[in-house]
Figure (cartoon, rainbow, N blue to C red):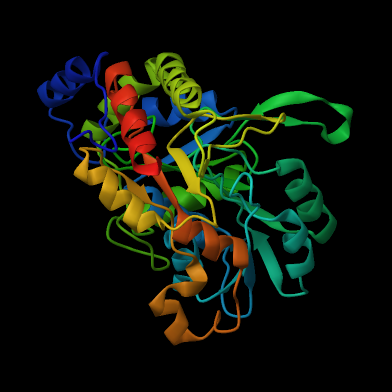
Length: 375
């Protein structure tokens, strides 16, 4: 079975972990944590990095740092992982979902504009499957209405967006646009620490608040707490792996883009599927090679996945829309929401094996299996 993802540790990961273990600093203190935070923040062009236990907790810390709560609304795409709306609901605020763009699968900016009300406090753009959101339009709306941006860059390691704001035309790194930006370092991400996440910000006060929230909001007096925080700490062992991964980021990104180009070459012209889009203003990272079956075809994504599995190819389905998730249905906020693009691509989309360690031979076998199923 060709796995949907397999990480690659070909740099200093083992040496740094051995050094970490020899030092005795294996928990939530140690030099590698500060180094990883500094290195990744600098890579994204941001001043502060706050490492946390995973991408979901990074979102929660970001929402809580902005002190969002009852009566506040946060606009986000329905087409994303449940963690995004979960962080908003856990804070007591209200998630408001919009549909996604049919090409990039990122949030529909026209619908975003229409969804803003006098209760909106923040926008949560999510870069999908390694393709950036059209951030200039998001930034313009946030500026016009005085809104914070919680940028979910969990799938956008190394992606760039060509910004034309203020006449300063330049490529900018994803993860550097938000009032607060979040990353995941799960095993299937370009940079992985097994589990792990990070919040990035240029705001000194927000950075300090994030550090407090991840560590139970300790006061300087030990075991005295001024509010309810979380134990969302990150370990020095994980950070040792992360530091080594960041050192290899250029190579990792090149490998992923080579993988994507190889799939493009082998699957171009195959009938019945749409391959990943690439807008001119985006440098994508092919986090996952996502394909979409034609609406008119007989197969749905789940039948397609089963047929590929029979041929030795593992896959993953597209996200089910947040508006369709049963826990949110029971709470009531999305009962009248039916974003058509999100519902269609959930039924028709999946992603192919896309790990950093995938070989050209494996890509060729996957492409052959796809053609076989669709023939």
